[in-house]
Length: 297
Image 1: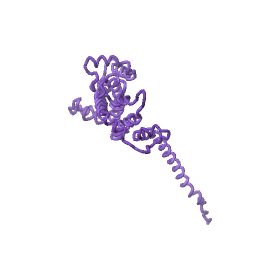
Image 2: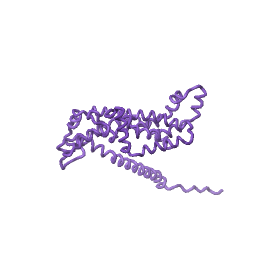
Image 3: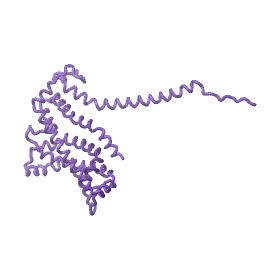
Image 4: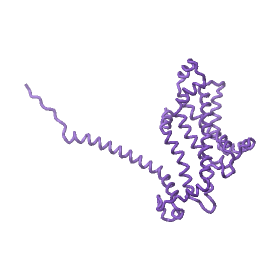
């Protein structure tokens, strides 16, 4: 009976080194990922940190040659100037106009998207409508500035928040219609057909079926539209004349004069005006991610 030769066992150094090599490769990959992530975050966070630093820096310090990222002697003087100058009123104007324009565009855009997806139009009128909406969206705002001025003047809505809300629909409504189209298309028609067999009308189906399923898309569209309306400058410049009615983008221009640029107040406005948008985006972050995921399907 021949003896069974033991199989050659792997060398101890190889059996130990293999897992460690995997770990080292994984660690290197993970380290590289976190390094790239940190560089990216620093790149995007640097302007915000610089803006916050200037907002708390005394005027005599940020015009010196030894300017640093963070103030040596922090101060709230720039915010006190803004408070006395009526910044809360301008912030309220911006909130009313931006939120009002966004809600109106979102409501009309959702109904228009649903009609375009579910209803049949003769002679491809739906395609012609979408093409017209796209042309309006891509058109420079200055093209329609004079006709809109005459329209607002005729309606008595010049220099008013309601007039600005209506004017902002020129570019917010086309954006909402195009962005919501894909979300409405993803709602299964069978659900609505089943509800219709149970006796549910159109409004009930919209409220109980379509609207909840389009929730992430509506949240994402709301944020992007709100940012567009929040930062709008041209129409506010043309249609607002009373300083107490100014929105923040128009109010900012008051701090850039021929003789001096008030960097402290400018950065203070930038810091304070960005906080509501950051809080809003953080609150609906999970809906934004779901909305992006649905858009990429």
